[in-house]
Every structure is written in C-alpha cells, then in structure tokens.
Image (cartoon, rainbow, N blue to C red; front, side, top):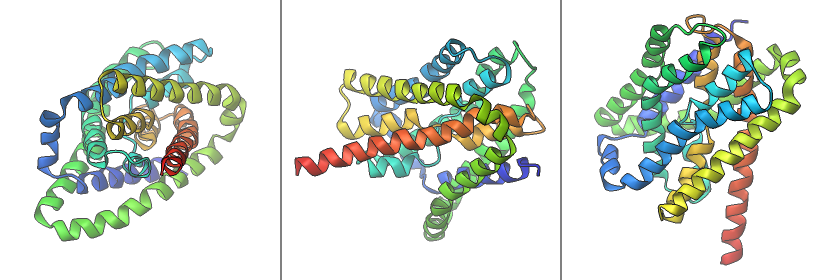
Length: 281
C-alpha cells in the first residue's frame, strides 16, 4: 500500500479544517497580544528543532532516524491542539491563531532547517518541498478561511464534522505506518521512545518557563505549553513519505512515536490541570 495517497488527503483536510476556524480579524491578535504570540513562536520555530537535534545526537541517532526526529520538531501546529487547549482551560482563540501562524511560517523554516540536516545524509529537493507544502497546507488554509468568510453557517457545519474526524484519521494513519514499519519501530522503540518523550517534556517545560518569565496569564501559559508540545505528525509523515521529497517511510517512524507519546504526555498534563481545578473548587 502506498501510504502517501492516505497521508496527503488527510493533511489537506486537516489544514482546510484549520482554515474553517479562522477569520481575518483573528490575525489582529498578533498586534493585541504580541508577547503571547512571540513566546509561542520562539518555542515552536526557534528552540524546538535545535533541541531535537541535540537530543537525537546525544541518544546516538544518525542518518534517517536523526532526520526524522528533527523533521517532527520542524512541524509545529498539531491539528488537535485546539481541542487540548479547550480541555486544559486554555485560550482557544490564541491556540487557533498559533496553529495557523506556525503552519504558514514553516513553509519557509522547514526547508531551511531540513536542508542543514539533510546535507549530512541525503539530498533535499527544496523546491518540491515548498510546492508540496503550498498545495497541501497554505492553499487549504486559505480555502477554509474563504469559505468561513463567504458561507459562515456552512463553515460551522463542515468544521463540526471535520473536527470529529481529525483524531481518528491521525490514529488510522499512525496504525498503517506502524504495521508497515513495525520492525524498525520494534528495533528502536525503547531508545526512540525515551528520546521523543524527553523532547516533549523539555519542550513543554521550557514553554511554561518562558510564559512565566514573560508574565503571561495562566490561560495563555497552558495554551503555549500545548502548542509547543504538540507537533503536526501528519505534515512530518507527508514530507518523509512523499515520492516528491524524501520518499522514505522509515523517516516517518519518529513522527509516529511522537504522535503516541505526545498524546500520553499532554493528556496527563490536561488530567493534572483538571484535577487541580476540581480541588480548588
């Protein structure tokens, strides 16, 4: 089975769904709340990829798996972050904006970051990567935004359906890749799982620390922790497995492990917050 014909439509639908939640006025939040947006984007775009490279190197990964770990760190804007922010009592509007901004910014930062790593192992067709991301991420987000502006009622109905399909679609994608690359996963899971889990814990801890230092509100802090900790596994899988870019399913293995451990860590984080809230009542 060529999984690229599954992952590419899923990524497109997820980005279209994101666009349906946006309105042009949402982007004014960048001017109204620059500290929160800046802290989140620094954590996602600037700090996470180098942190992933340092950890992957420290754990002895090289070649394809090293690239896969850095790749997932270069793909912020997880599709479920808005739901997690809501469950955590965070700022959902801020979460939606950050997901959209980070998805658009990575159109430029992803090729740059991956070219630094790929030069050590395999070549990166930068133009193909840019074109694929434009088609699968930028255009669907813009299409969803236009639908929201033109037909708001229809956009609400469509977004309600797609938001319920997002998580099952990602789990289906993860299951298919797990079956296809189970030998690679089994051989590296203990070391890879530990590396990925440490990456998530460090990323969320740094995000929380940055939010506290800059004196953001508790709602903003919770949202930023989730946004920095939740990566776009579908995008990473699409880049790794696409025949137009790397065409390497094994490179997607870290994204699969990340998707699993990300949900475990962030669900635990949400459970702790909800328990604290219940105790304070």
